[in-house]
Image (tube, rainbow, N blue to C red; front, side):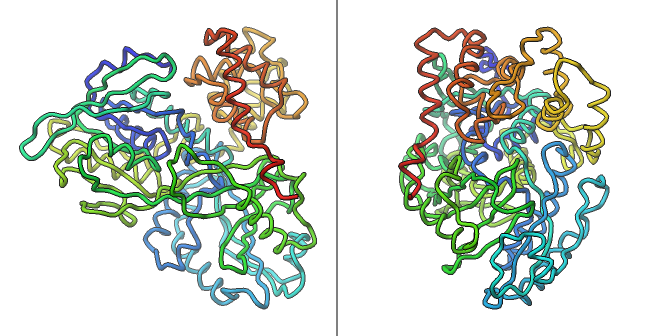
Length: 558
């Protein structure tokens, strides 16, 4: 995954613009079918919407309220597939829905919904390892609910429902496993490449897109990337990218923003679903020894590059939590990090749509622009299927008429780093601790590497074997198990180009909150040597990374 500008000179069959999970899934589907594929990302792979999630791989229980049975069924099918394809990063998570005497909807409605949820996921345990099997839902008495989660409000509690979905431990790393699968199959991936124009040629009707122009924001050099078909998978930036060639705006996109709070652990080990008095819902989710609270949902009308959390939305979410848990108030000093993202909602306009769930795929040939497809909407869980739908549509276009793509079924293929499709991640972990035992790191650090990198953790162990100093902790004071070898691996093998890339989407240490000045300097020194940063560049990288963390004092009501 080392960036090589010379690779951009190829004539590609397919160019995917946007390195979020939709673009990554599409690139993987294309590369697995033998298409000469290029993926271009403005910033870093999976840096925006795809990382700002509730860290769930789920069927979407609440979608049943809208009678979206097809969406739920597809999500539940893809939930099983992701659990089998990336077992080291996807784990079952118990969910608890407390039911009170004034709950709306009430017990009967939840009972009906969860029964249907179970029916729609009848194949959930088909050919899955023991550590991924999911039981049917059960109803717990009020005493059982209080025993499971003593922090819940007891007044009016009549019981609760227990069911299971999956948790994505590190969505940032799961993004990368899709990407590395694509690269392993021949895809050219280039991050920090901002597309700033389109090249077109005359077509029988209108124009045909033949190339994109863009700037490598690391080197400042401009490039032209040619292709037969282009996919616009830029999510919240979709209509902005289209504005680079649409003479008349034909497509619109609705955006909403949402935040999550990372806090001290508030509840035990269940994800608990709450519904506010205003009808909103939010989760309190257990994650890596913390609680992850959210999401919020509000319209966002500004440019997506200007996104930032605001005091009012933090205040509202804190009030929702404290109303739901009056006995365990959420205090300002308990908040470690605020994560924010934008959801790209379905657009409207003159168009031809094709999607498995509502209107998500748009072929611009109807508006006189051949050779380009756009995609909006979708959800993390169903990204593999959406990627497949995109490539099946692309293969039918006349620009790829000469392609003889082999039949490929990625629904039975492991992602990069997986011990194998449907293989037990826990069994692999225990086996790897023994087979790859080393005195250079602790068992705790070894386990951490296996859970983050899967089978590829041996590459990091080999770096430590060559240089024992790389076994040192990145941030000893944090108690986290990240080591310096991961920084080298991120730069040399995973195309990390900035401190943000390293901390937020390779080591993922930055997702726990600001890692501290000492850790930031340590990583900047090591990465700077590898990337040949001068002192000015190193200072600017440190400042830019610090600025990712808004002042909690200004945002959190006290």
